Amino acid sequence: MKQKITANIITLNEEENIADAIRSVQAVCDEVLVVDSQSTDKTREIAESLGAKVVVQPYLGDGPQKAFGAPLAANDWILSLDADERLDANAVEAIAGLDLANSGYDAYAFRRKSFIGRHFIKLWYPDRLVRLYNRNSAGFTQAIGHAKVEAEKVKELDADLLHYSYKSYGQMINNIEKFAARGARMLHAKGKRARWYDPFLHGGLTFFKKLVVKGGMFHGMPGWTVSIISGFNTYMKYMILIEMQENEAEEETSA
Image 1 (cartoon, rainbow, N blue to C red):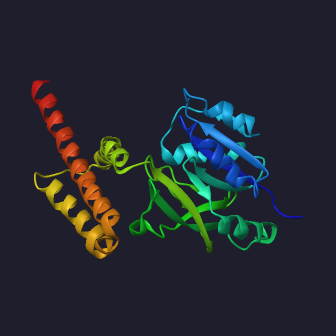
Image 2: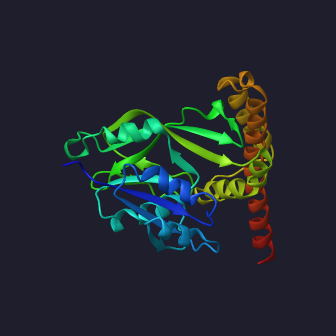
Image 3: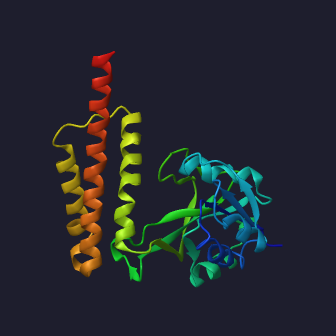
């Protein structure tokens, strides 16, 4: 008998995405568990109408939130998905062909194909991520941002996740404040200090890495645009860290 799988999807106001995410995993998952961060739209209602088990949990951070659902799952094998991700047809086929009951691996990795609007961002591909794992021997790190599954024995599958990351470049720019601020807080928590030139240095290095080292310059306007936005995001991360340091110094002076 084939080993059953639980899909674990985290959400926050994902009424536009959740139905497609759930439908994409139902061919290979016996259970769909949605961990919702107190959505105010119809995310939970849509998920429940499609047969998903919904649990409400205030957002704990990327790693803790994705790890929260694993103990609640009915199965040991967990397929972790974000609401803006889908299983490609080749991923459904690959998962269906696995003998998880007799697997010698703790987890399986997928390639991720990311899109901004209609544009496939080749610059970000293959972006390998471990998303199918056995909760008894693997699990998500506790990182607040961009957590990953830690596993000892990982098999890379010839399969893709489709990631509809942004509807437009404008939406990507609008998210810079959130991601840059989160990155700055993470650096600050680690005791990192930024000097006046760090925004220019790190922002410029990110732009160069994306454009030249990763080959964004050969991917047309999407490659150039993503390289520029990525560089600016890094610039703002260090600028916000400097701002945090200045606020701390002012508080110490006035105390």
